[in-house]
Length: 352
Image: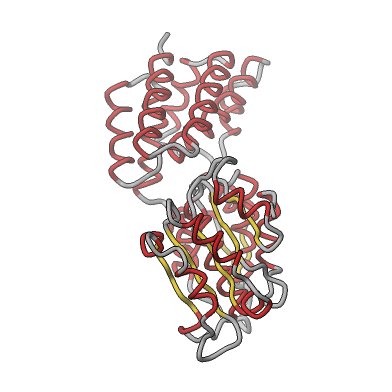
């Protein structure tokens, strides 16, 4: 069966061992989201205090040449506990055949006792594994796509509430602007923020996350790298922009994440320019940037407002959107090349 992306979180949150399907395929370009969804399913299906023997991890390479291994593992009952989960990682050539054999050999006992979870990358609709999971009533296909700003905000608020914290509106805006779109990265950064503030028990008074907390805990070199990339691109500094891209790449930042950071800035730049073209003073138009610009960056953005027009910004946004779409599902090398080409075009346009 097939589930729409926006329904995935609700589906996983409501998952129970008694109603779970026999197989769940998790796929998509958001690799962190795939891993986090798989971890949540594990906890929902087995509970918090499951026995290690109830969990089996298989790499796709282990299924190569012996596709029946998956069905055998599912049929082997755990020594302790009533349920068992098998997670297949790195799903590639061997997983589709193994999944097909597993579903074909199901009987009432194994379908109730075992759950197979397959973690995959971005799969096309024509993928054999995806078609199998979407068409079989005993399976479920869960897509994981990169989050939009609204989704990041909701995820951050929910996470903080679960940790007995509230978060100020300005702090939430800062988080949405600074966090990447990969769920795995978001999870780690939110955990880092809570550790910075201090873990609270449920019986303690609710804590508060402020903008100062976000800046202190997450104002790291990655954000500084984004700022350098954004400013060098928007100011037309080709060599500096190229070095900023290289540094982010060396730090392991996905090309799509870098593009998203530049796009977010240009969206706000476009809004500020439109305000100015309607007569709003530049000092007021700068208020469109959330969180407020650091005093060291303010002169650079003011220069960008002189270099760009709303029409040029609209064209830059079109280039960035096309590049982000092309990067989804592409190999890391191809994504890097496509992102670099798009950023180069925009950087050159700054001073035209």
